[in-house]
Structure formats: C-alpha cells, structure tokens
Length: 297
Picture (cartoon, rainbow, N blue to C red):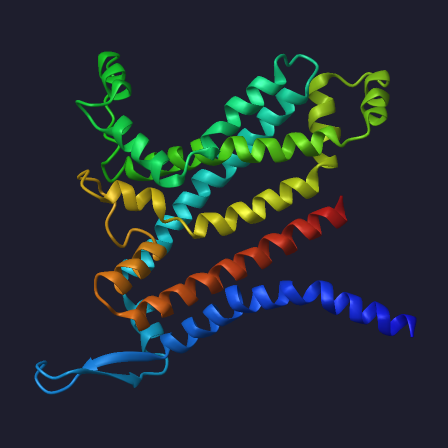
C-alpha cells in the first residue's frame, strides 16, 4: 500500500514535467525528423502547383554534399577552439580573483561583470556592430590613432569579432557559477593548506580548482552545446555591414537560410538534425573524457 502511494505521488509530481517535455522537445524533434524525409517538387514546367514527395535520405545527402554546409562546421571548429578556452580560463580566473582575500568590492564587480549577460543577444550584437564600424566607432578611431589597423568585418577579423561578442555576453555569467562553487568549499580545507605553507597561487591551482571540477565540467559541456548553436551574433554581422560573414556562415544560419529564404524546409530540417547529432556526439565525448580524467585523479 505504501509503495503504491509512493508510486502514485511520483507519477503526479513528474507528470507535468513529462507532458511539457513531450510537447516542447519530443514532438518538435519527431516532426523535424519526419519533415527531413520529404521534399517539395513542382509539377510540369514549374507552372503547376507543388507537391510534397517522400525523398528518404536525399535531404541529408544534399546537406552533407553542400560545400557551404561543410564549411560552416569548419567555422564552428575554429570558433570553439578560440572561444571555449578563453571563456573557461577567463571566467575561472575572475572567479578565483574575486574569491581571494585580496579582492575588494566583490558585490560591485560581480554585478558589473554579470550585467552584459542581462543584455539580449541581438542588442549586444548591434552594440558591437556599431563599435566595429569605421567612421562611427570610438574604439576603431582610438586604434587607428594609435597606429593599429584592424578590419573587424574582414575574412580574418570576422571570427575574432564574433568570439569577442560571445565572451562579452557569457564571461560574467560563468564567472558567477564558478564563484558560487568556490564559496561552497569548506574553509577549513583552505586554512589547512595555508598552515601547510601553500601560497595563494598554489592554493588556487592545486586545491580550489580541483574541488570545483564538477562546475567546470558542467560549464564546459553547456558551452560546447551553446557554441554549436551559434546564430544571433553572426546573423547581425551579416546584415548590412559588408562583413565577410555570409548567410550560410554557420550550420544554424544555413538551416535558417534554407527554410526562410529558399523555402526548402526538408533541407533545413535535415541540416538541423545533423547539427543536433553533432552536438549530442560532442557532449558524449566531453562527458566521457572528463569522467575518465576524474577517475584517474
């Protein structure tokens, strides 16, 4: 009787979650998979109506065979190699600095560093487009007056420009996560390290960082997933700036262009599914890699 009540209570409490999960996740993914298996073709010489026909894996083959789609993954690879280490190291360094005894006005700096995350991504991208634009930006003018010439919209500058916007948005947010984890460390452990003669640098690297390893892994995992969904920042840079960022610069932008500019929803769905599978694979790799390192430690 008691076990039946426990099961019933668990079903009642978990029921709303599974209903929302099904409506918001399972059904959209299922519809995308179904949509990716069909394509629209025009009858006759193009003057007739369109009909939806089953195409199997043709949309997946078309996406993988498209050079623009493959190059989008190359851009993502460069973005991840640039962005993820800078974000993790920068956020961790700031959190360690705020957690140190030398830090002053911790609340002020936490708020100041977190505020950029409160700015919506579109607004943040628009602000930085202004700051990147010659003849408008005080930043570019100051760089030119100092003899530094750099085109943020050039093929060489596009990727660093996007990385900079993303860092500005997410550095403070992840710093808060690391700082909260550092605050949860037992202070007696740190006091024991000090008594044993460990300096501030040794305590931070050898004691604090290993103790918040779970938070570092979580942030790394979410950052990998978020990086693969890169869309807003390059989309804004692509609009009316003369930037080297094209409409298919990332896989997400490729899917968006296929759906809303070319009206090829089957191709867009196939591209989205391939991107989701890539994210799932990388998440698995990151989890297994960090799990093995944790066991060795």
